[in-house]
Length: 475
Image (cartoon, rainbow, N blue to C red; front, side):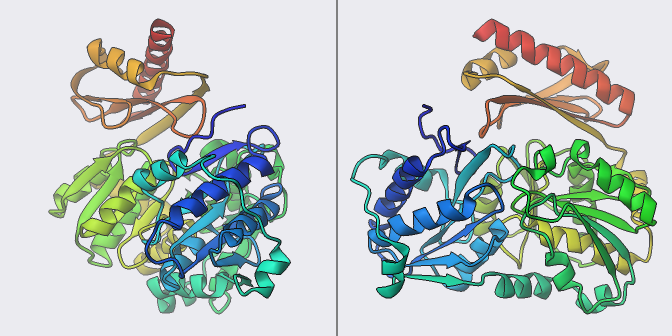
C-alpha cells in the first residue's frame, strides 16, 4: 500500500485501495493533532464534500475523528464547491476547512484537501507538519449522534452565503439584462444548479448538461479540458448559444467554449479575464501565474504597466502571494483563477459568470472579443500531453534536462531555461515547452504554446520524445 503523501493540493488515492476509511481516519487524526497545537482551539473546522463515490461517508468519518478529539465541526448538509468551504472558513472565522474531493482526477480517486484559516489551501509547512503526525497517536472516534448531542457537531447549508459572496463580485445589473443563451456542463459535479440560482432573476437562459449525480462521471475525468468537452461544443453550436461553460468535479476550475463552438485554452481564458479586469473594471495590482501559463498575460501586463510573476504549478503558491501582496488576479493552466476582493482561492463558478458579464458589458460575441485580443497580443495555440510513469525521480529528470538542453524547438533557437517547476524552455519568439512530473498523479506532463498550430504540434512531439528519452536515461 502506498505511503500517505501530500501533493500539490492535499492527499489523494484510489478508493478501496489506498484511500480507505481506515487511512482517512489516520489522516483525520493527524489533522486533529495538528490543530490541537494551535492556540485558538475553539473556532472549529468546516467539512465539505463532492459527488464522488462515498465522499459524504468519508466526510462524516473525518467529522467523527475531529469531534472525538474535541474539535468543533460544521459539516455541509450537501455536496458543495471547494471554494464554498474556503469562504465558510473566512466568513465564520474558523481554524480551517477540509474538503473531501479528488477534484478533476479519474472517478476511482478520492482525496482530502486541507484549507487554512486564511481561506485557501494549507501551505506546505502546514501539510508537512500534518504528514509528520501520521500514526503518532491512536485514532479517537465518536459517533455523529453523540457529537451532535454534545454540541460539537452540526450540519449546515454552506451554499446561500457562498452564492451571495459570488454575486457581490459581479455586475448583476449588467448580467440580468444580458439575455444570453448559455450552455453549462457541470460534468456531473457539485456545480449543478448553481449558475441557474445566481441567474434566476436574469433574462439569461441556462441549459445544463451532465447534471449530477454520477460518481462515475459518465466515464470521463471531470476535468474541463477540450477532450472532455466535445458534447459541450456540439450543444453550443446546436442551440446557437452565446457561451459554453464547464466546471470540474469540485467546481473550482472552469473551461470555456465560445459562440462558434471553439474550446478556449486556459491560456486564452486567463488572458481574456485579465484584459477584461484591466480594461473594463480598471483593476490594478500584480498578476500572478503558474509556470504552465503563457506569453499573452506577460504582454498584457507590460502594455498596462502591471508587474507579474510566475510560480510553481499549484494554486496554493498563487494564494500565498495573494495573502502577502497586492495581487489583482492569479491563475493556473488547469483552469483555476482567483481575484482580489473575492477569495485567495480559485473559483470556477465566479470565473464562468464573469464571462457572461464580459460578453454583456462589451456587447460583442466572445469569438470577436478573443479575435480582437489576439490581434493585439498575439495568437496562442496550446497543448498538454500526459503519460503515466511510476517512480519518476523529478530531481534527476530536471538535472538531466538542464544539463543537456535542446538547441532549438519547433525550429526556433532556445533563448532561456527556467526551473521553477520542472523545466521550461523558452524560444526566441516566446514559444515554449514545459516538461514536468505531476505533483498529484504518477504522470509526466508536457506542455507547449506557440503562435502557429503547426509549430505547436512540432514542439509537443519533440518535447514528448525528449521527456521519454530523459526518463529512460535517469531510471
